[in-house]
Length: 540
Image 1 (cartoon, rainbow, N blue to C red):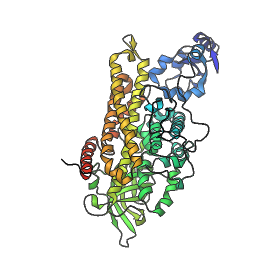
Image 2: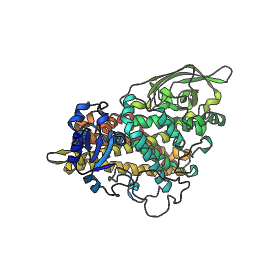
Image 3: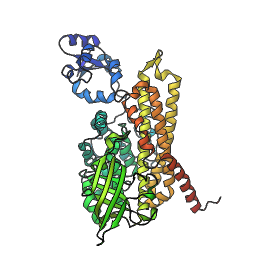
Image 4: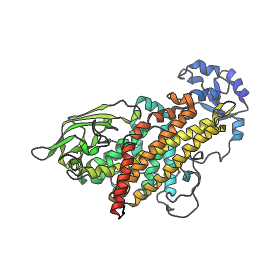
């Protein structure tokens, strides 16, 4: 890479036949890129030999720079070289050698881990920024670095393009499997017996709920609900019931291909007339005369990943009315299964689907759990689903906050930067206080879930998780709105500097409603809390 003494030297070389521009102190040769430039070549030619930073940020975001920097960057200005210091940001690359076992337990009272990331206050959890934590050890730090490096290289530069296309390349999903991440998102032990690829930084025996939190959290940094629902949405809620409650022969037959990324699975519960009111679903499964099959008829709606799923973990009515007549079946794509993609307000690349089951024959061996006992399985699974939603919401709130902080340091109004206006700092402060409060509760609930059995967690944590689900979605909505106010018109346009904020604001409702609407969650939280404490001996 060449060092240019000044913009004048760049201009001189530009006149010599090339087409060079400067962005944030780096020099780019866009001679061969002129015909590809979406805005046309004249815009580039007008900026030839000049600092184009201001013009660039009007129309683009950091992901665009990250995508084209390796191809087009030819050097930097000397002034930028002088400004840079090794301590500008903490390392984010994955470790060269795998960390096979933890050398420091999460309970050790030792010094905090090294700082990590860009160190913008509140843009990451505080344990990233050298604060003490009882929950994380060196395997968590190594996994964090591993996932972040992959997300920044393979995902972030392409998220907007994938969202517009309403599909994430299957190669990215397969990479999730090859890196061992899919198998770690089951809300339980790492199912080593069904996989051949493992995470580089964590031994499967060390894998815990906080490793799962980190994978979800770091992928959510891309700022796209569609992306993360594509990669772990249907899988993360459709596969765990099969693994935990499916018959051994069924699990052994289908789980290896699912965890290898060769087959896809989703959860099919919601119906046109049954959302949060799961106990009143009507999709029917009747035993055949010979007792060897269930015959399924009914419809499911708003099913994540359903359009390309091979398997459907499906709630069906096998008995009488209410929760006592609900069972869970694994339905395999085949005759009688019809899927149609739905157009929704947000999460475009997640494959939201309308499913019709018409006289579908399902072997009785595909029953998950016991007949008419599917409701407890569904409720247990809801804890895992809602925790995933919480993790994503808190990180999306952080993304809105982080984008706002960065923009506020660049944008000037009324003669000074946005960050120098007290009203902007107040907005950021309100965002930060809600984010940190929600995340602290999240860490505690993840820890409790790790210590409890599924049955105990369903009894004791269901209400708290429901309450935090509502808290996290309102936090997300608040931060998305405040970020829009800070970005102004840029948050109203798809793509560009405000692209992440625009997309996330559009996806708020996709988090506030699925998994249980805020109103239902808050009511559930109190009903369950009172029930738990009554059983523990509380007197009112």
